[in-house]
Image (cartoon, rainbow, N blue to C red; front, side, top):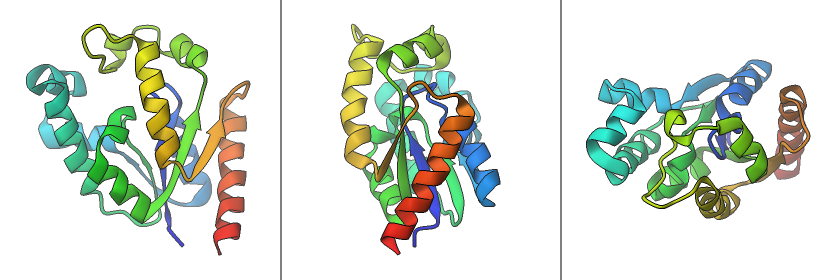
Length: 172
């Protein structure tokens, strides 16, 4: 059985917040790959993006996530990891990919200012465009999907734990 859980989803969906609590509840380690990127590069994400551009950042993001060696951990990568084919292939091999899904309206309300949040938008791209583009990729890679609609964070955590338990029993 794959011992890692990898959370994917839009920025502000709660990958890190939910991930930390789920890791504690399951006795797993926790890895925030955005922090690994910042550590490796010695800069904040927005500084890296300003320096090397979106494509340069995705190369770094792919390399860092692809090289994660983890067992019995919850991994929370950045929302753009779904553009990183090698990283996603690696994640599918080492764990269960959990898509934390929230509606566009929920994401928009939580993010407020995409630039301050470090959300990478191409010229002329809206948050809605980005949401629609990534949603397809999240669905493609997900082993399980957890809907956050109408849920408080505690409910999302319980839904994740229940879903993972059921998924693991069905795969055993």
